[in-house]
Length: 328
Image 1 (cartoon, helix red, strand yellow):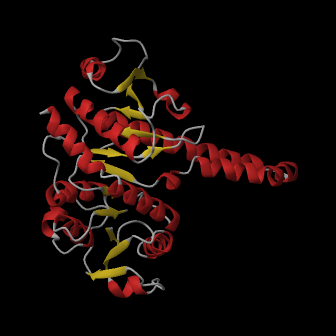
Image 2 (cartoon, rainbow, N blue to C red; image 1 turned 90 degrees about the horizontal axis):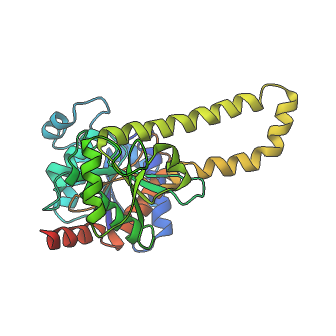
């Protein structure tokens, strides 16, 4: 199995990318990794070259560049060359922690979309209180959506939850402003009808306040709403931990309490850590394309590689393709 990685994408590239890749090689004997980026900078941190190769380029796409223009003009950028490895069959999947819009553009224009999928969906796995997590799609690949797009998201999410996360008949929920049938706008009302008649374990509408309680294994929504929900969850988690830190370091008494609580607080933080769940998959493309978080450290990159490996191993893209073909 071969995975191509954009070694120059993300806030801590290439160091954390290289460290995560080496950890993955040590863990998975069936894995080969191609790092795409500045070879001299990559080799500063590469102490084990077993089953790791490098494609050299000095060009990369910056985080503030306009995605479509950057992908079209920078043909030799690390992210574009990474996607090209997948397109030409030299890699089974690819990962980048770089510019999200550029990765979606490279995924669409270089890797290519599965025939029958109207719009790919950006799909992270988010933590829940019980530690199981749930997947949310779409969180920004497309701002707008039609009811049939939400149905496709539900199908793709169910396949991933079953094949990769090992959930038998995953519960699918539709993000809405209330749980009652008939709630919401025209999009959610129409999508509710489509999801109700589909061959899915559809549990109906779910509210944002119940997401972290694990109300569903797969939650579908349009990209605008999904992105707002995602950033609200991320922001709330960061704020809560920041307030806890302030409260537990305010005086000697609270510092003593913090020392006692430290193991449990660390356990809680790990449970809510996005890095344990990998990256956000671009579902609907002809091969797995994973967007790692921009601030990913080596642990997060390793988790993204593990996630990508499982997607290839369970042929998630192929399964989506077969189901879509059977429906058409």
